[in-house]
Length: 434
Image (cartoon, rainbow, N blue to C red; front, side):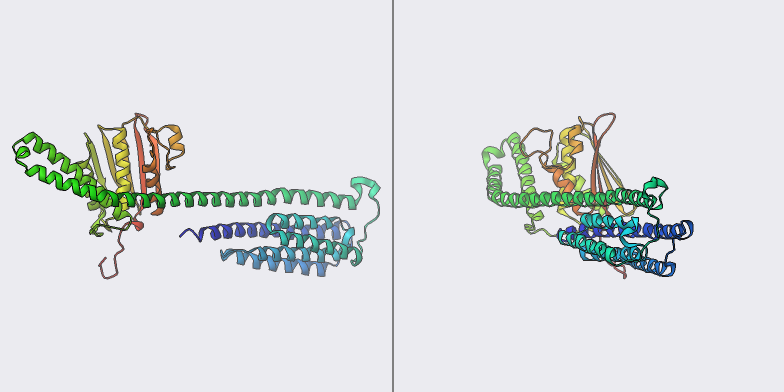
């Protein structure tokens, strides 16, 4: 499931870079129109307007085609970006050929193409771009239409050529500042997403190792638990114990706790895909939560537990051991922090299920809230602490949901589980069945 993520990140970065090139090309179109008009009509420099405007029209058509390509949302490869930059170089070379070649002050716009290639393209493409722009510059020095500009460089800013050089420098600097900054931001966002994916892959690998360890431990515990169950059954029938009500009560309590241990082992094996004869059962959301709460309340020493189910119209679902364990983990953490009072609220917000667990304990430390769901981040100070919330966050993320936590002003903490109903409910078939 994780393999396609990296290509999608690459695709997003390529699309963003193509979008930057499209915007840059529109600026180039407007800039060329203004420059041609000012040079031809303002400075009275004769230019082949028909041919130059035809080339400009070709650039507009190409940019429209690029925009349509961008709207498809498909992956943009290095080759496509390379071709797009080559078209820009060709159009620039054609315009410079018609307007003085290397004597045109805007010849330094070639540097903009080279820098964009260095930022956007792979190494071989960037090197090729350097070679092509160098050849274009040399070709313009040998073959180009002369530009009728007076050689009055000594006039400073009063010289049309120096003015053109100034405009060319300012344009290059502004475009580089704006678009290279944007492109670098896109690349940084891509790197951040890749880092997040690598972190997620490491966490999921950690979960797999934990699952294998838990499954192995559950198998190993099965035999001694069965032996203890037989021994306790024999003790209960022995005359020495049968005649003592106090011992009978203690044996009954031991059998209850032993049965809970066996249920935990069964749950571990079920989560690992090795259910001990149990199978998934069709139920409803409210029934699933009601039964979960009842079982949790009966097996935990909770003094005051408030359960408020405001889900509304019930929906069908299949009981899921991972979802059950996730909710129980949050309740267990709340009970450990607040042994005398815990509250669970169930709400429905649109197409999402919202579970809110509240306690009146000491709350989360700021460092815990900042790293919620990271393994081994716990304030309990014991080995292996912090794995409960780690598993909760990862199960919720697998289902497309989220987990958030915050401290209450009056004391205690609130943990909210948000899950999409589409991930847990059964879809109804057109004939009304499930």
